[in-house]
Image 1: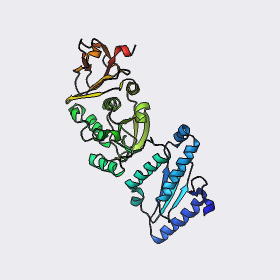
Image 2: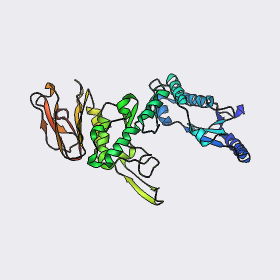
Image 3: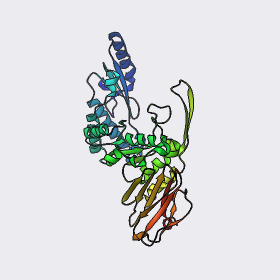
Image 4: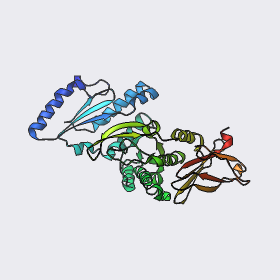
Amino acid sequence: MEGGRDPLTRALNRRFLPAILGREVTFAKENGTALSVMLVDIDHFKAINDRHGHQVGDEVLRQVAQVIVGNVRATDFVFRYGGEEFLIVLVETGIEAAANIPAWFFRDWVGHMRESVDSELFVVAEYWHPDMAALGQYLEQVDRQLMLFDVALHHRFHEASRADGDFDLRTLFDNTLVAAMPDHAVTIVGNHDTQPLQALEAPVEDWFKLHAYALILMREQGTPCLFHPDLYGARYSDTGGDGEVHDIMIAPVDYLPRLVQARQRFAHGAQTDIFDDPHCLMVVRHGTHEQPGAILILTNRDSMEKTVELGSDHADAAFVDYLGHCDEERVADGEGRLTVRVAPGSVSLWVRSDVLA
């Protein structure tokens, strides 16, 4: 069998797959034993090659193969199935055991990859659990070597959007990963599983998506992740619980590209959260000497006004709503005290007029 190995990864060559898999399927059927097949794909492998070169890409393939081979039994089979794909035949193994990858494996694998390839490697795991205790326990098991999607925050966004104006926005970040462990939280508004008719269906209603994105993009806590259809839209058909096929359209979120620009331009400096009203939140990014800040204000009910102390550096400065939902100009007083407004059920982002000139 040695001559049938891939020269780069030392995994078995896929030309042996039909014979070996056919033999094991026959054995499993005749003896009533379980058999599982696992396909492992390296996400964004092209980006690794483009950014670091093909030598690094080859090393990633070798290291991944080494980790896989080192963590299966001698009776199992590991094939290089494609350019960055590996297929594993797990004999006498049921689906529950095959799907249960222990936390220590990810802990050791991430540590190994950071030592061997890139010490700044960004790793996020889709450990889909809304309970903060479970998320915290998992992070401890992997020695906090990776990021997790903040499922709890996504569920809060979903609940807030379904409750219309009856949700207490002051509680939006309660029992969320970004509140407890912000350095390990990837904040999301939706993904392919939470969209309508999918396995973990819990979509954020359209009217609240901009609210949610504004909070994850303008606050310093967490690493925000955008859902592609929220930027560009999507259309698909799938079968619902009623057995009927439904056409689903996800519309692009208005002003989301503008918010992405705002994060780059204005999400700087110290942050002050003003969460003192059940239906209106304010986040102040104070900026730095070199980079401007902004004042985010949003509401899930009526139009609101709030006053914030910005300091003497902003005395008599004029501010406008970068999102354009409020068309007037607001001017701070001689002590840098500014009153800003938000329209009913809307989001505004107030920035100094002179930085837009």
